[in-house]
Amino acid sequence: MSRLEFALRQLAEGQFVDAVRFAEAHEALSTSEGRETASKWLEAIGYRLCQLEDGGAFFMAYGHLDQDARTKVKEEMRQLRGRLLPAVSFMETLRQAQGSSAHLQPGDLLPLGQLMEAVRADASLEQRLQDLRDIPGAKSADSAPDRLSHILAWLEREGYLVEQNASHKVFQVTGKITYLYQLLQFMAENVPQLAEEGVSDQLEQLTIDTPAGPAGAAQ
Amino acid sequence: MSTNPIKDALAALSRNAEHVEAAALGGTLAHDALPRQALAALQQAIALRAAGDDAWRLHPRLREYLQDILQNFGAYPSPTGIGEKITTLRALRDEALQAFADRDHESVAALLQQIAVTVWDIADQTERNLKFLGSMMSIKYGAVQTLRAKLGQNRWYQRQAGILGQDLARLLKVAQDVEQDADTRGWEVARLVRRTVLDRLHLWQVRLSGVSDQLLHEMYRLREVEVNLKNLARVDTFLTQNPAWPGLDMEIPAQYPVALEHAALPKLRPHADPLDDDRTVRHELEQLARSLPAATQLRRRDVIAPLTPRTDVGEPPQPDPYLLALRSFGLAAARAQHPLSVLGWASTAPEASVLRPPAATAVRPSVWLMFTICALDGRSHSLGGRPVRFAVDPVRNLPAPGERLPHTFRDALVRVAG
Image 1: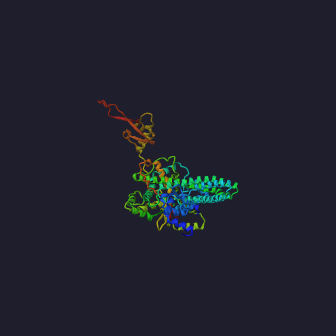
Image 2 (image 1 turned 90 degrees about the vertical axis):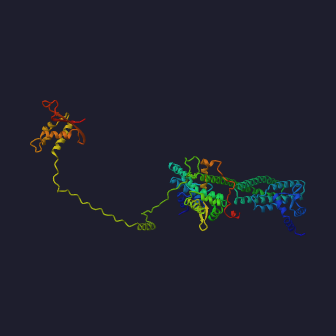
Image 3 (image 1 turned 90 degrees about the horizontal axis):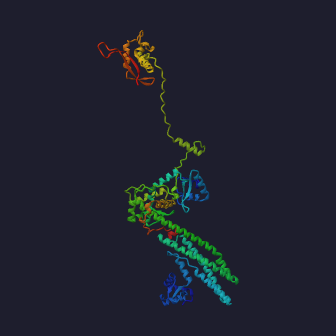
């Protein structure tokens, strides 16, 4: 199977074809010929090829929003909580931990061992994980590290993370994370309560990651 | 004292390292802050230059060298400006022109030599500055952690790039003037200025423009990061405070991210083509066929024996003649224009022959009369599929002698009721 064929199958299945999880497929779609072929193929079945900003992940979108498509989009909007909650809980926990990358970007590495240590070392973080509800697969009696494992498993199934090192349990953030940020921005613009100034932001201790790689490691 | 001036200079710098460091970081040293011995040693090593009446500054090249070392550390390492050197270049040109006008050829030669050194310094420093800014871009500046500090650092480097841009624009003017004046007088330095500065200036400006673009892009990215983190914190708080909130129940707004239109098809399920003659496919199909469960033996349906008519039944019962006669009378009464006499019909109608002699079924008229009245009066019968109700009116006899009312009747008239 060629790289482009593989890319088209992933698009049809609803995957976000990005440079982290589907490197070769993303490269195939990044050429003008690949984009043209994929666009024609998708348009023939009523869809179109889209790409997240800054050369991000490719995905399949509705060709035009007819009544059927509008109904599906509205249904997804109605179920926004279930799609966002585990990811938002995890990312906010990371931000509060400040022990790792606070602003997840495509390509960032997340060693599970370090995350577990950070949770065990911080009672407030442990309590925060313990208090989280609606974590897929988690039971109320699960410990905080177990809950963290369930969240990471969910993020992997949903395509936000990909396991890069099975023996050391190191995960890598995929390009689909940009899609999540767009959903958060959409919520911020359309949920009236989120526009209120009374929401505590606690932005004073915002941190950003040092870049992955030798330059980052040297710091 | 050693006869090696370099060793002596380095030794002096080493002995007075803290003063040298202070001058490198602060720019100038107050006269009163320097002990007399340190001042003498550093002056001996030509490490200090006067900065006004009561302060000292480091030798420019020594300061640049120490800045190069500092650039690998700290949060705000900065490129070394070339503005002063451009001013120096212009001043040296003016001096050289004056010396040339005064026919002081020795001074002209010395000044041209200094112009050459300054031009090399400018080129060298510009290259280093551009390389420095480029390396800062590649490691995302480094050495700061908070978002606010990153934004501040970005603004700092944007300013540095702006200053360098202004210096390059000034350098173009000054270098062109120097080159023209030197060329007019046949000085070799004209070629040096052309080759070392003017021919490379455009490329420097292009590289600087690239750095500026990167800085703008980084500024935009950091703003996005700021917005993303703010949204993340707010959405997390909102979801925690509103556990029953399922999602957005609203019409799709005019402005929305294209990511909302993300779609997925049901999983593709290809089927094998039974007519495919490819060997691999046939092998797979045969294996698939062999793996099917054994055919179920269906039970044969029992054969139904053909029906044969029974011959052992007797004659069918004959219909009752009186009921047949009653039916005929009912039909006649339903069709009649006037009420029909029961006895009159019985004595004359052909269908009533079974009631009259010599028929074996003959009956007395009074019996037929009572039978008909009982069967029809006030009852509904189905005639030709229609329900018909009859009314019977007796034909009364005259009252018996001595009676006022008749108690007997001799016939009955039947009509359709209603």
